[in-house]
Length: 473
Ligand SMILES: *Cc1c(COP(=O)(O)O)cnc(C)c1O
Image (cartoon, rainbow, N blue to C red; front, side):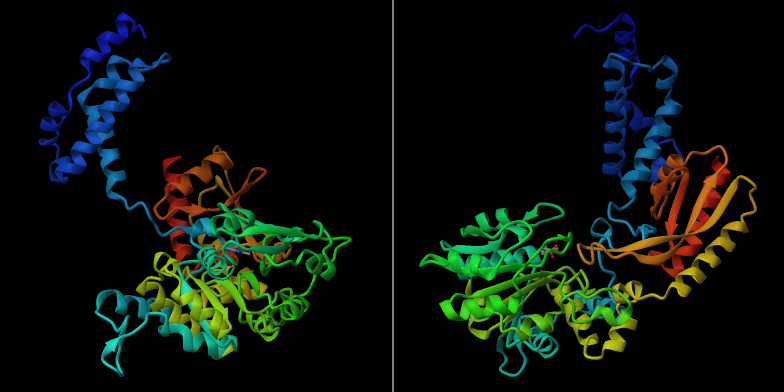
């Protein structure tokens, strides 16, 4: 690549890293910054300038290379470097189980227990009655069996891991029957056919996309069949001319041919949400009651706990899963166990669970409560008293998210905002880059915040962000 004379002159003028490091020592703010952070920031600024100069469409001039402007750029870089990458983020999307925003919020008892276990030694793998080595899996097995009514239980890192582990243990090298209507892809890269392949099982599709009958399963059974798998189609629904085989009928079929049956529930729930105005989703207890051999589900979807993969089922099956060496690779961490145990204990009393587990509270929050919160934020924003800020209270629907209840609209109250002279896109960007970031959505020219998922102590932070936005604009 041939550089113009002007470009070559600019390159010669570009100061070196050492030179900027020297002048940074005289700067009030930069002189106190840790050297590694400072050097890294200077390098990155110099490198960016060099790239801009040699790019074809360079708009860099002599003035951009002044020491003062370079130091300004370095300060911005340093600030970014000193901000953690993982940040508290305000969820104004109304999607309760937002996978990109961290899914479930933990109950305060779970947070408390997690903090204790994080900072102290614990009996994680130590049996206090025998004084000998114990198993971390015992920590939540009792309570899981108690609330799910299953014979045995075990937990791993996440539900994707749980499914993989079950397939690997029970049906490696054998064929697994799955209805064509249930070959789902869950966000990210979890696709049933791919997991099947990774686990060394052979996927045998049965039935059709919209209709699968018991005889489709029965006709597919042969000597090589190792498992019948039912997958809860969490994140979509097939509607219209449809038929699926119930878990109960699959369990009966499995018994007849001595083939184990498994259900991937996805977002397992211990609560019948239809009692709270949501639609009916299968509960873990209902699945257990069918006599199915094993059920897997997530800890951080409708359960409202930490990320985990829970397996409940028959004792002999769970025992063989526990012995699988793969278990070690998918091992659940002690912080997760601490939070999970506390969360599960809340389910001993449903009323307590609904009140104490944020995911359940947000999902069942009455419309009036959300409307009240919206009124409050509306008033606080109005108090900024800037005629350019235009606010509107509007009715919209929240979503459950996390692949659960895909068709359900939860009536909610939102605030739509407009700022004279600033586009909705720029508001969205500004709030996204705020600390804490505020994530909402744009509808036509409105920036919209759904109050269902905004926590009480976040209202003030939103007002501060808008205040700063208007001051800067
Ligand atoms: C979400 C989901 C998974 C993956 O669970 P993770 O806990 O996110 O690993 C697997 N299967 C189904 C049906 C799901 O809905």
